[in-house]
Image 1: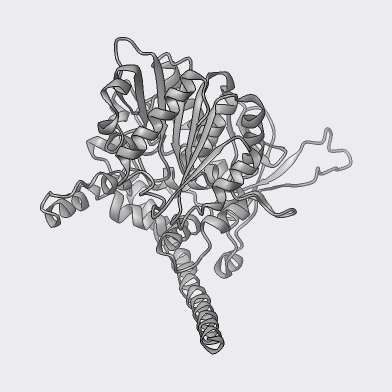
Image 2: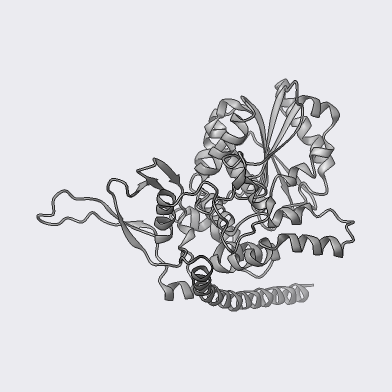
Length: 472
């Protein structure tokens, strides 16, 4: 028995070492491919759009604060970028957008966003603060000042079908797509559903909506939203998809448009971050908070929160496959743009092929919503929301614990390989009264898909208990 355990241990170590070696080789090749694609897309952009588009591989340059120019300042860990002429304030520009250390990135000298020391010169008059700023942010923000269009034209590498661009020619271009169901004439309570990364409202509408009881649908108004940049919602090419932008669009599209005063929240994965931020902003309006697989990895002391988050959700490993996919999405700006060019721009073709191969017998809503986004939306949302808010999550959780009196329930699939169960227990460590339910044999997606009937009943119980003031 002892010999057998020793053999198993040796084989495990050998397998782990082989995995590390293969991961290093594969990701080094991907680093090089991304470097090459950077220049390929620069050429393609000039040919297709007669203009070089900025990317996060470029070196830094200075932006000096003055009237009508870009102001960059620091507030704690978050970077705040303001356009002084339009008073537009964009928060949480994550340094993971342009600080992803690799062999190739070191060669190409990718720069960090950092403030420089004030420069003092004799006889130069008043000293003005200067900052080293990634040029992509500067160029994107300058574009918002000078070249705004009433109906923005999609980039050549983005889909221009009616579904993806309907917002550009309608009165809904300033609001998100919201799928409402349930109570209409007499609404007793509202429920807001927020989906996760690279998803849409169909994650809820195709699973839970058909499975809520008639009693629930007569009482609750169900509001599932497509987040900014995803599904049938606006996908502005000049947006940096920051937390502030996402929250303001939810408030404008749901809370204001539907006159919502108090509401329950159900959120999945990335949506949990937006749910917490929304709850902190409207603490007196939240009736219950239900989080599914919240991505919360406390950073070790002395380590940057955003960088720690990026390495946890995107560890640059070949296995498991979902971690490999997350690593590609998070580390490679140009490889992911190439993916969107092939898959998202041609989503109608892939949807047709899938239906043909399945004989139209399999519901493909998860695949359909997976393709309905732009590279700009996915890239910035991943970095500015998932990574960029990592340093704020603890503050949000403390605020929720101290200011919210509502029911807080957390669901997590035990087999989740992307966001491990420890994340939910990490949340519970900050909010001791939160109830954590770990579901056996379920992962990041099947925590809902495949158990929608049971989950619908669980949600109804949570909402009913919130109304009666009981605890589960």
